[in-house]
Length: 556
Image (cartoon, rainbow, N blue to C red; front, side):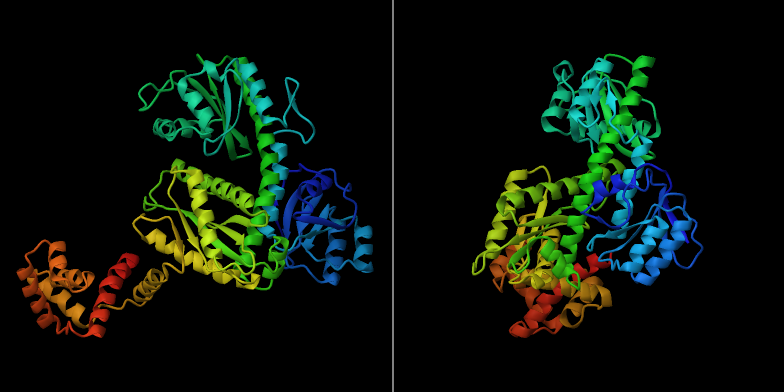
């Protein structure tokens, strides 16, 4: 069976190759002008009857053998398919070449390191452009759609109002002239290139975003005059920018009253051109970004494709240190839908900013967002013993650059003396990052060599939580006694151990008289059957007191 991914005819085969190749696709054999419009993207399934739409681009997942490629090409030729994509490298022998000529179906190769899901997403974005306009040059009042700032000016002229074009996280992508005619909040937004959160919070509470996302017509927003730190003294007209059912961003105009019917329609028409521009920008940026993320992820995971991924990143035979960057989440995951969308978009912006910073520090470095973590590979000159310290300084410099807009954490892995050791450096960076996440926020950058003990304690707590091991020995007896008699012998033992046996310091920590503390100390030794002069017994008790609370927290 051929499973449809999308079925709207939009882009030509040549257009696909121009936009996605050679980053993702290479033409192996065939005529790139053989299909004027791609009729859809489908996934080949050999276990069911293929029924592709005309001019389909077929993704031949797991199709490798030349005999199988020839058979599939002949079958697709009878169904008027535009092209077949298989994983590179492709063995294009004489039989394959003849099958391409006979069937009229172009044969393309998907670059190694790129995923089929990535390719399908990129093709979907290209084909979806037809939902918002033609693939040729489009204009609005004579202004080419390729210039987003010029387009904002054109929209502003049509509406007779200052305009901003924003992405899904309310970051300003472009703005028109005449912004000085708007209110101070608009000026603040332009200067910061981001709508302040205090305004987005109020707009969300008032249901403005929900109305905008549910409506295909402009939404009129009354002035907001009670927002702390400023107000929106002018009304706004907002319209979501869409490609099909996907929200790409929005257009905001600072107006003096509701739009006329003519201007309402002009704004709706302009949104189609804005969507076309955003799709084209995203298609190009996403291809590079996703491919780089795949290469960085493959290099850090190791395995058969790691050596090639490292070579394509330009890091072959190069010592390096892995940095792991993440946003500290002190909210416990409790976010509104709007804040979650902002958080997701902010992670990619953070990855882009960090990649730019690393490139300025070392042109051969690499960085990408992999999952929830931004990983950076910082090359290290051979023979330099301070590679980890230098990587930590890179992290500190980036934190100084971005300021305190959000709490960022950096884990620094050990030096990988050869590219095959990058997975071990990544594991060390992840472990250091986890220590920072579990901490109190006192530090933002940590090398695994500096927090190795804390990391081991967290891993031991994981083992305890997974197996469900209960406390044992003296600590268990003291805990049971405290529960039965409402005493605080466990607290006393913890304070004494933390103070290294200093009774004065320990008693002050728990706010009791030293004599009272000494009595409790003798009592806990009796109840717990604990020899406080035995170093092994003290160490075992200290481990249990540190590990079991962490294990309980993880189970909960």
